[in-house]
Length: 168
Ligand SMILES: Cc1cc2nc3c(=O)[nH]c(=O)nc-3n(C[C@H](O)[C@H](O)[C@H](O)COP(=O)(O)O)c2cc1C
Image 1 (cartoon, rainbow, N blue to C red):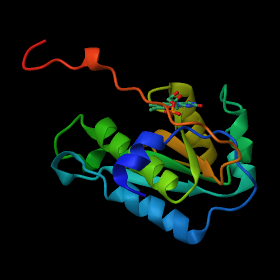
Image 2 (cartoon, rainbow, N blue to C red):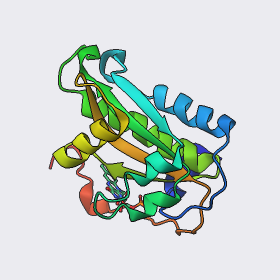
Image 3 (cartoon, protein in one colour):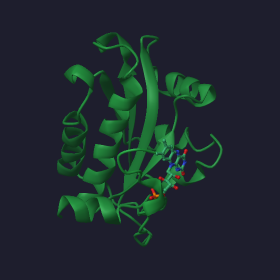
């Protein structure tokens, strides 16, 4: 898939079949994550890959997350803040990794949705408790994936009024 086509057609997918995400697809998605840009190339990220249905089911009670029961592969993007070179950029770095994962999933024909974790303290603590995340690691976002069981049409969102040329 061409890059522009991929990013213009990606949508959040929240319904999945029970077909597994292959090892090859998992690798592509995690490679895409770690190829993301980051401030000073610090790469302050860690990833927890989750394919155990019982573990996945523990995330279905966070409010609006019931659909995660259908996800066959989730990745929790985490920050290891001590790896930062310029303090404060880690949410941007982790967002770049997360968006790369969404686009890679779409490219290989998987459906993906970003589930907010940071800065929702309750969700951060949930991730720590369920996955045994240590104190020096900050859970940031869950990318829930699987073989799509719904079709969501692309949406064209370009809005010329949001573009300011040379001055506001
Ligand atoms: C930072 C962030 C947090 C999000 N959190 C959630 C979430 O907790 N639950 C959910 O179902 N979708 C979540 N989403 C997905 C958005 O709802 C979705 O991207 C938005 O509605 C636009 O739709 P699209 O992804 O299909 O283009 C999140 C997306 C982002 C970027």
